[in-house]
Image (cartoon, rainbow, N blue to C red; front, side, top):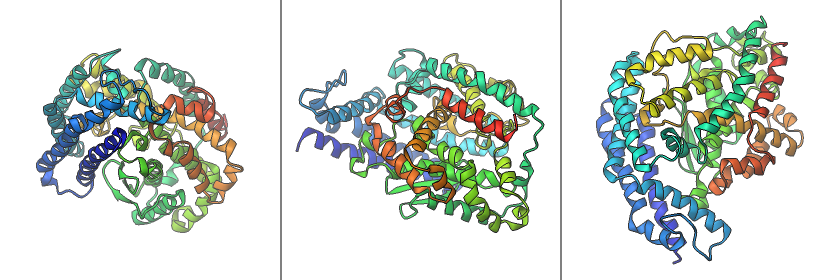
Length: 503
């Protein structure tokens, strides 16, 4: 057997172990009894440790060392271009993993698993002091991780690179500053417009079971295969994948917020289509991995916002929604509903924010995370810092920690560096969607007739099946012919909301 075939066989074992761990985490977030938290943390830690040991062990390093220089990652002579790209990406994962001792991996996994459970309870009780001690432990573990990996630019960049390979906080700052330069004046103009979008119609009483059924119908129309996927409820909507044939999503419901569940269902459906669209032949290798978290987010937010908030989408789905909720919507016009779902209004909760102010939520988190990691700001100062940043960026101030510093799960699982990828997803998705409109004839007309499959298929070819053959920067150039810029996203927002708000 060739070294590359041996390597793929061993990497499948690593990925299977990670999948088993992910399945336990999915259960932890959905159906696990509350009292099982401690043993579940031990079980997850064991699987994470086993997968780490296998990745850095001789069974992987042996064949990998025949294909690349283990010190530099440089592919050896005789490999095809595709093989060279594959083994270089495998080496990146190996190189990062081998820097982390087994004991650290075990401690990190067990601590973050418990931290997620403590966070959920602290958020429910609106009690940051309950979460603070375990958060301090998680942050100390992140500092150790940075020490193991070695700082090249800033400590934060080491963490950011895991989620968005090749990206630096300096470049993120350039992009975010370009967004802020045009976004803040736009939000101010909208606030001063005096236009009433009628958003209160979305806050009437909407039966949760009917919301569920309607969301599932949209998922099916998007091409989400429920034979190899499922939807469940959780406190924080998420997508998890164990294999392209087992991709699961969760959502949450609010009977007095119609858009909340619909948006999160479509959003997670976009993530799920990416996972179901990957090539199972390459399972276990980077070619069956997402390009980056930002590109992953581009897919979810493309479906949620560029499709799910568009006039063509609702010209098809709104009459059907009226039949589901006639008591609330029978006397509402399509134009009025379209305006309501596209309300721009600064709010406290990130996951329920509109597509414009959402980016300000991310920017403030980016600033706070840099202060935590680069400047080591004390955990006790985080609630006040968070509230100050909310007031600075959005003009609103949380009244509780549950609405403020406790609202997101990410820090509990050590996801420092994750947040910027959400806004990067917005910057990626507009040029991608613009190109889809150029290449798919009459795409808006197709969407308006309920045909979402052609877009799904186009994204599958251009994005989903690419895997990590390309970096995010390379992929955007491949698809659009241009480098990443804030301009397409801001052009889209300005053009759309000038019409919605009569600016």
